Image (cartoon, rainbow over all chains, first blue to last red):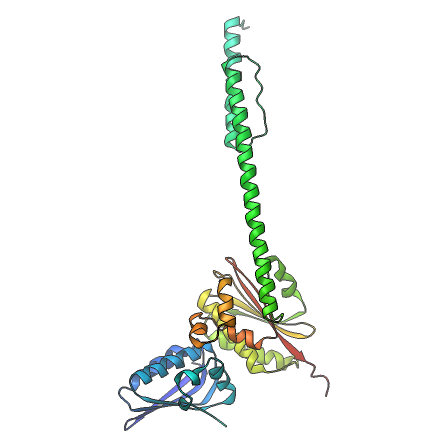
Length: 106
Length: 247
């Protein structure tokens, strides 16, 4: 598997720690990892060990963020590397979902 | 042991021969052979039938000629339209995107030398393709402006193959100035009419709904050659190489 997913739930906060790549081979696993977090108030997705995301991966992120915002779950994607964030930016994710959702590694 | 033919039987046989010739002419018409003229000179109804066959052949020949001319006209118009379309795309993209006819591709495909080759079949192959590009650059001590951008373009093109064509191939080549990535498939082909939307329309929804990371390829490749038809698609992406032999 090119993507390792670690799911943690503590009180009302869920944390997804991802390692690997987000592309056609892993995007479905990423999308379904959301099922583990029912009714959390806050979801943090840690991208620290994500090395690569392409437009298919972005499609998966869009799916996840949309679902969270619909359920009023406060979602944050943190530790996005500059390199990976470039494609978020090109495809306009911060404009669509709010700049506060994405936290880039300085 | 010898046969004597009386006049009556001779004329009957003669008649049959002419009938056979008429039948043969009709057979010719059926086969699309319109040039033969049937001449009977019998001065009777048979000659009239022969004339009728001859004039029918002439009419059919004219029809066929008109149809062929119209078809050629349609082909010419289509070629002209494609020519206009590709000039427009080429100039709007500042000479970056070159649309090619199928028969024009081979020159681009064979330029330079081949470095690596990878069949694209499974989702994991997209990652393999990206890593292969990185390894190949290292191995041949080649340097591009931004390897991450090359990997993104490979990812988009390879994913597109898997999504729309099922299987395909990736080839990494080196030309005098460029790293050349060739991604090909035998799928149903791209719709040229959607290109402008993918390239020039702003906005996430447009780009995503097109289901093709083409805008990303367009952004990062130095040059793109694209040929697509019902027989498949070839996309060729060039990335300018920097000379790393110089310190």
